[in-house]
Length: 390
Ligand SMILES: *[C@@H]1O[C@H](CO)[C@@H](O)[C@H](O)[C@H]1NC(C)=O
Image (cartoon, rainbow, N blue to C red; front, side):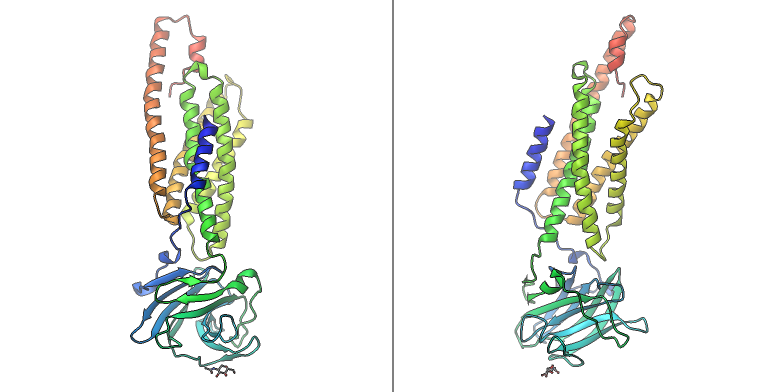
């Protein structure tokens, strides 16, 4: 039954079309509550672009946000009016100057070796730069290179070192550094090129599905099996095996989901979801303790079994509460389109409702057994063994 349920669930989640996660850039805020009409998670180098287009004045105000390769590194965003790569780029470079202030310089990059600091092919105003949470933010207003042409070639880059003269040292040549370019439609907000922009979204969805199934559904289900099936003498020891199977599967899926979460966390510089992360780590520790506790389970009737039970049940309930809480926190971060949140609420409240009914049922059975036992004191063994007064 349990494995059937699990496979149904995995089947459903894999066949339902992947919902597109909301972009991270929409959660980024600016001082003075400055608002930008458009934003995009750029497909490489963990970078973001926000902008306001002014078609009347033929200008665009941009914010480019990217993590430098090292804290002393640089980030750059450019428009290339003549080609689609680095050569010909008219670049804004943000870095920390030797006096400790953040600075923005403009570079005319006419070849791979010829960088000229100075005027660009178009006017630039209001350049400023900030450092926040491991990310450099470049602000600027630029004139569109061609009047009325709102689609431009963009190029962006991050590097690890700046010379004492403020000159950016060569960047790395990883796949991400080479793919970070493409076209940008300032009017519609569409970007193209730049490689597989959805790989992060896909990873986040996989992380969400694994963890919702494990911590959010299988763990609570396994605990329900242990609590309610045990009331029936006929279900002994079947309940134990189902419980064990469910919890070990939940643990395996949960660890996989947990690992994808840590990976996502390490990749997302600048944007931290501390409480989601900390609850996740606590859950992993508690669940690992539960699995280990199996090996140290004292025999039934042993004098410390009572304390082991308290410990095992306490940890189990903590896992349920934290697990469900963290699924909701994750849903809030991912903000998936469609009805993922509603679907989870339906699943978890039906489990909750079932638990409520079974809980009442269990109490009734236990009371009946107790009263029967009280009227017939001779039959104790069997009933005592299974009467698990909640
Ligand atoms: C950029 O450099 C190229 C080559 O040196 C030059 O032809 C071009 O005029 C420069 N652009 C600006 C705006 O200075």
